Amino acid sequence: MRQVLLPNLFAFILILTGCSAPLQQQMPSGEPSVRVCIAERSRELVLGIDEGAVLETVNRRFSLDGHRELRCVLDEDGAMQIIMDGRPARTLRGAFRCFYRDGDGVFAIDDGHYGDTLLVASDGRMLFAVNILPLESYLAGVVPNEIGRNRKRSEMEAVRAQAVLARTYALGKIVLPLARLFDVYGDARDQIFTGREGHDPLATEAIGSTRGMVLTWKGQLAECYFHSTCGGHTEASSLVWKRPQSKPYLTGIPDRGRGDDYCRISPSYRWTEAYGREEMENMLRTFLPAANDAILAEDIPERDWYLLDLNIIKRMPSGRVATLQIVMGNRSHQRAYYVHGDKIRWALRRTDSGRPLRSALFDVHIERDANRWITDIRIDGGGVGHGVGFCQWGGIGRARAGQAAHDILTAYFPGTGVARVY
Image 1 (cartoon, helix red, strand yellow):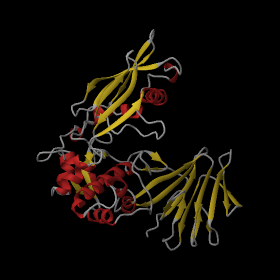
Image 2 (tube, helix red, strand yellow; image 1 turned 90 degrees about the vertical axis):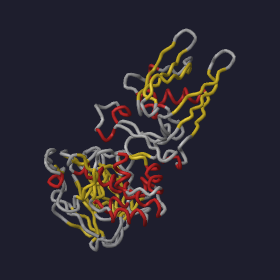
Image 3 (cartoon, one colour; image 1 turned 30 degrees about the vertical axis):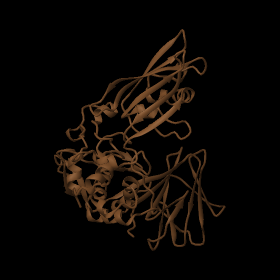
Image 4 (tube, helix red, strand yellow; image 1 turned 90 degrees about the horizontal axis):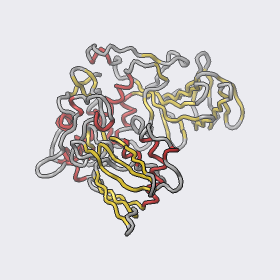
């Protein structure tokens, strides 16, 4: 296992990249390392350690032999108190790293296990645990979480496509010209990373067979987005996220093969969600303000304020809802609230799980009583996720149909190419 050295533990790393330079000149020499934020704590961070662990600061190195737990507690003045197996050991500021002398040990944080180098740092207000490891090792803890574990051999080309996209996404974060403590989060804010847990043999093979390969557009790293199921048609990024004009390869495509949609094999190709009126009102009071900055929590009274209507005002070319009108009020006062694009999914979240609506590709059916008050709402939808870029279940369907990874990638990202950068 390769050990990653930090030239300055207390400095944020600044990588300067010329956007117009050829892709090879933008990339680090050889396989780069990636810094993954695996934990953020406001007060305390606990690491499980094994024999052979070493703690290193900018100017000192300490053996951790004989210890099983390292607890880092953040003081009010920003200093870090290091407690070993329940006993105070030393006070540090800024950052320290831990690694194993033989390179083979693991660190335990919560339910996860992580190898290579672990950086623990404080910005004075928060503690961060950052796993620093080679990019290809990082992908082994990402790709199975994104495309799914235990894929069949007939689906290998979809897994290879996912590996290329995950690598491209991570490299794009690594070369960003920003001063940061880490490159990516280890959760859905970037890519779900589970460390040493859940490595998948087929995914590992797919990563190895595409080593160093990335998706490109006109000599630059392409923007890579992926989601579970498009429902039959992907969508333009500009419409989904209300951004400036989409890149030409992110404008949306029909995902239809010979006679049927490739992602029809998805368990969530079509689905139904049902709500009572009071449940929907509670969801909207909880999540609607966050889905539209123009809506304040006090704009939705807690009492005598009811859901009166849900109207689809505008759709995107794929059929996804572009603008949803939500009418709330009472007999004498009413107000219309509007939510747009992918934020619609986040406004219509179940309060018990916090999970967004599966897709913005849906129809609304409303039942009313004799007085025209809403009693129940049914949403019939299709697909899972934002709908931009790579449809993972569609990719699996294409692989089963015999398409190669390159063909799958260029289908979802028209005009792009694949290049090897290390």
